[in-house]
Amino acid sequence: MSKQSSTKNEVPVTGMIGIFWWHDGRLLASVCRVDEGDVAGGTVDSRFAHIETWPVLQKRYYKLWALEYEDVPRGRVIYLQGAKRFRVLMDKVLFQHGIKAAILDRFALPKNTTNFVRDLHYTTDPKDIDRLFGDR
Image 1 (cartoon, rainbow, N blue to C red):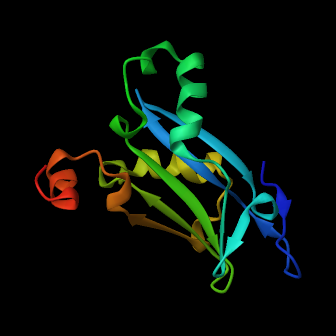
Image 2 (cartoon, rainbow, N blue to C red):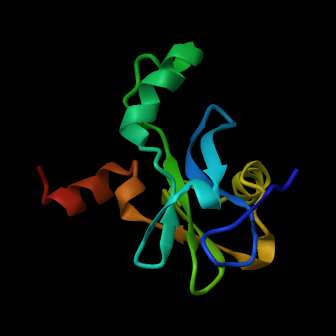
């Protein structure tokens, strides 16, 4: 199921980039090939934004109607050109074997060149959010 893609003047890259949420035991994702992404500072990122994609998902999945996009654990997959590796930035609550396996599968990511990293930007933990924004 892996697709081959490449960035300019590089060897084809196996794997996809994009955004995702984990809700109700299911991975909800918007993915694209690496060569469809935007390059900035050696990082290739998809053009998908969580805030813009959420209303589309809410129309498809009625269980999401009452939720905001930041209420559901989420993350993003990017490609690091220099290192030739994928980085999965995500909420710390998603660090479970089954969830990581689902992400690897859906994004067709090679396990040996993919790193999973906690990112506070994607947190759903109220204590972490308070630390980020200074106890609102």
